Every structure is written in C-alpha cells, then in structure tokens.
Image (cartoon, rainbow, N blue to C red):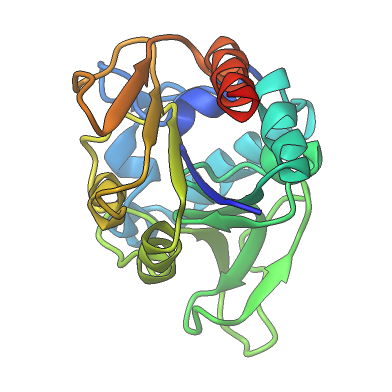
Length: 230
C-alpha cells in the first residue's frame, strides 16, 4: 500500500465554518493576532487568551467535518494515509482519519504552563482562570503560539521523507516552518497542491488543482482513480 502524506491548513476547515487563522486585516475572530496567538499575549493577558480559546472550542463543538475531511478518511482504503495539519481543530479525527499529527497543537487539549508534556484532554470544555494541572502549574491551551518552538516539525519532516505521494490542501506554502516541509519530499514523488489561489505554479513535480478543499479533493480522487486504471 502506497504511503500518502497530506499537509492541511486553514483552507481545509474553512468549508466547515472554521474561520481562517489570520485574515488580511491582521485579526482573528476580531481579535488582534498578537494578542491571542503569541506567548507574549499569554503573559500579558491570560484571561483574554483563555476566553478567546474557550470561544473557539465552542465554535468547534458546533462544527462538522466537511466532505473533504471525509474524503481523506476514505482514502485510507487505498493508501497508508498520514495527515500533518496546521489546524488546531479535531475535524480530521471526527471524519475518521486515524493518523493525524498536529503541528500547532490541539484545541481540545490543555497543558501545564511549566511542563509541555503534561497534556490533558478537555474536549469542548472551558479552561477557567485558576485551573491547574496536576503539577500545580496553570493550565493553558495546548496551542503553539508565535514565539514558541514547533515540537512536531521534526516528526512531520520524517513523514514527508518517507512519502510516495504528497498532497497539500488549504495552505499557502509561505508560512514557515510548515512551508518548508515540501522540501523534504523525495524528488521522484508526485506532489499535488489543492488551492484556489496558489502562490506557486505547476511544474514537472508539483501538480496544481486550483480549487477549494472539497472540490479539489474530488478532482484529486478522479486523478488517482484514472492512474489506477491505466
């Protein structure tokens, strides 16, 4: 069974009603990004940060996986699929995907402020000011913020190195370190990019499917089906 690695970004969940992380006005859900997505913001105003991510958690609770999420889950019937996502939602898992690596953390988890490895599942419940981890430190969202390292970038690079095919959906390939993952793909494997407004052009290695996630994945399925018939 061939090894398909999928890299997904905000565009993957946009059709489920999940707002993109950063719009052109520098706001995320009407909040300045630096105030709600940086380690400096956490130290400056942790109550604001907790309220913001509590709101995102409630939004996620009411969202549903879209047909694109479900298509990726179904591809496990013909590929060994591993998903690397920049998204903090759990829509891939809820759609049925079994191997998902989150680069930027998970909204449904919290962790100790002092121990990055002390992680607890909280589902869609709020984190309240004063909530503590088992080590006595404050609980914080299990999110990788600006100013923090991305611990899973190494494992993600190893996945891409072993891929027989790379599929990229809903990410601009301009935000690092995630954008650099494409460079770990072996030169002999096909790379498909699903993006309605791609920042790069097609070439012998990268095949562009200029569409949103759901329609683009339908087209990808058609291409794969045709290749299997040939």
